[in-house]
Structure formats: structure tokens, C-alpha cells
Image (tube, rainbow over all chains, first blue to last red; front, side, top):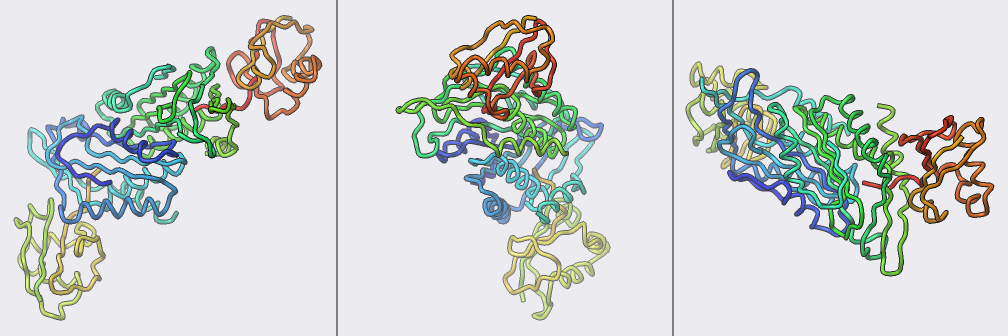
Amino acid sequence: MIRLQMEDFDTGAEINALHSMGSHIGAVVSFVGFVREFSDESRLDAIELEHYPQMTQKSLERIATEAKSRWNIERVIIIHRIGRLTPDEQIVFVGVASSHRSEAFSACEFVIDTLKTQAPFWKKECFSTGDQWVDAKLSDTSKSDRWKSN
Amino acid sequence: MIRLQMEDFDTGAEINALHSMGSHIGAVVSFVGFVREFSDESRLDAIELEHYPQMTQKSLERIATEAKSRWNIERVIIIHRIGRLTPDEQIVFVGVASSHRSEAFSACEFVIDTLKTQAPFWKKECFSTGDQWVDAKLSDTSKSDRWKSN
Amino acid sequence: MRIKVCYFARLREKLGISDEIIDLPDNCGNISSVRAVLQKRDEIWQQAFASDQSVLSALNHEMVTSDHQLEAGDELAFFPPVTGG
Amino acid sequence: MRIKVCYFARLREKLGISDEIIDLPDNCGNISSVRAVLQKRDEIWQQAFASDQSVLSALNHEMVTSDHQLEAGDELAFFPPVTGG
């Protein structure tokens, strides 16, 4: 299940929802990403998340589908917020439910790593001194690439 | 932070607590384990969790400390329930906060894998036809052993 | 042939446009050719598309490489490397 | 010398005892020796400790192997492989 939204989400409720989707689910692994308070040395006022509306949903569904085809997992929930977010707010949730915990760990990490290099979101950091688009990180590319050889 | 308790816990609150422990924490990875409804083919009434009170806390602290020494992570929360739990109840929470998500994933999986073979808990499954101690799984031993060679 | 082209994020701001319809010669070919056409507009466009790595492409909402062929009615998008999550 | 011995879970139920104080010869040695002493009690104790793998040991609240030496005042625990989480 994919959700794109401006509003915040309730991590505990999502984890319970994942678990309640099947009677043999014993494990839920989740990742939550937050807006940091500082970027380098500067205090952030906010971030703004732009995305490509016609493509985003499809792109995240494709990532979830690939995770399900590669690992023995039951459900995936991806929630990504868009718009303006202030420090400490939640940005993204990836939750995976499975009867096998190691598969849930791999699938969850795969989804967030792949999202970071494939899903059409762009972050702008807003400082009191002006705005700045965030540069893509080389480390994200290598984390994502690592799943290709598996 | 280690907690052993009879009561349920609020996963979302724990994840928020982990995040609020530091301004540069961008990622929280968590694992939640649940009581399954069925064991093999039989419907469970409940499970009972016995532990070794003088040892349990120390054992979990040692696992959390080892995780912190091996990965660049900020905080670890481990919550394990004891006593009688019914199907769908939460048993265990492992949450790891970090500025680096891949370290958080590894540390979280290490903690739950190690807990499953090192922490002194024993599960008994209660069926309408009688009770049955759970056998340790060989797969848990191999998951735990895998961290030794890393 | 006619296609829609969209621009996002830093690229959108630099070029001052979020989307447009452009007419291409029928045998214009692949995405690289469109980039070449756009680069001829002016200095800003030339620079914006100068590096292959700093501009990614999606064709009909799928990430693709620049050698992908185009068809009439396609929606082509250009954007910087993504930074969500 | 005197030590405390604790039993947990399936082992506790099988033996019908959760803990006891036992007196050992001063040079009794290691955990294996204690196991040997306990196995002599009767058929049930003999069987319970028959397999090395099915009974783990903790000495003063740390998991240890059976070759660990004992000292007076130690708390020794025997239990089946753990199944928490």
C-alpha cells in the first residue's frame, strides 16, 4: 500500500495495520526517516518536498512489487510526505510484514534504498539565509546499486 | 534502554522517543515481534514467557552495548514482555536510531538475532489440549552465528 | 511529432519552466536527440543539460536511459538525481 | 564449597525444582563436573542432562561453556536453548 500525503502519519498504527493483515505474520520491520534539525552546520527552518505526481505512485508501487517478488514477505506499506516539513517531522515510513524476520529486514532496506535513488522526490532545504536544493548522495547510489548484484 | 514488562507498549511512541534523543538522528529502524495465531496447524490460546530475572536485563544490556560498539548508531531501545500473552499481542520491540540508515538496519537485525539465541527467555505455547514448550529453532542459531564472522 | 516535456526541481527553477509541448521532426529519434535540440536554445539550456549524470530522464513515468526512442504523445521528463526519503 | 543452582523452563518442570543450594567437593572443578554429579541422582536427572546441546549453562548470569571453573558462592543456572523474541 502506497500513500503520498501532506499530513503526518502514526507509525504505531501503521505497524499494527501491517501485522493485522495476516494471522501468520510474526514480524514487522520498519524504517522511519525524519527531517534533521541541522544541515551541515546550519539550522534548518524547513524542507520542501517536490515530486512528480503522475509518476510517484507508480514508481513506489513498482518498488513494493519488486520487494514482494524478491523476498518471502506478506505486505509492504510505503508512506511519503510531500510539501513543507519542519525539523523533527516524519518524512517517510517503510514497513514490511513477514513471517520471516530476515526477509522483512532485507525487503525493508531494499525499499528505502531504492526509493532514495528511483522515486521522483526532490528535497529543498530552507534556511533563514535562503533555500538550497539538496544534492543527491553518492552513498545512496552505491547502497541502491548493491541490491542489483544480489 | 532496556525494559522488561508485563504490559503492552506503544511502538509509535518508542520510535518517536528514539528520534527525539538527538538532533542529527535521521533514521529509526525497528523490529516488532507478535504472537502468532497458529502454531503449526493448531490455534493458540496464549503463550507464556518465562525468563531468568537476575540475568535478563544484563543480557539485553550486553547485546545493546555490543551493537553500539559495532555500528555507528545513537540509541537502542529493547522492550521484551514477560508473562501470559494472547495471539496478536506484541512480544518484543527493538528500535535503533542513527544518522546512517544502513548501520541502523544492521544493528537492529543483530540485536533481535542475538536476543533470540542469547537472552534467557523461554516460550510456552498454550493450546486448548495442553501446554507445550517451544523448541529452539536451528535457523535462529545460524542467523545469530552469522554475526560472529562479520 | 508532438511530445510533452516536464522539468522538475532545480532544473525547473533554472530553466524557468515546468512543462511544455514541443514538436520534433518525425524521425527525431531518442532522448539524447531531444536533449541536443533543447541545448541549442541558449546558454542556460546548454549548461543545464551539459552533464549526462546531472539530468535524469523518465519516459511516460518510467526512469529510462537517454537511448530510449520517442513516439508521438509521449511524456518526457527531465530532472536532477532524486533526493527523497 | 557451596553454590546455588537454578533450573528454568522445560528443565525446571522436568526436574520439579527451580533452585537449590548444593555442596561440592572443594576441587569439584568445572560445570561439567556438576552436571556429572547431578546426573547420578536418578533416571530423570540422568536423561535431563544427557545431551550437551539441550542444556545450556549460565554462571553468575553470563552464558558460559561447560569447561568453566566454579567458585564458592557462584550462581549456576541450567536451562534449555532460549526461545524469546
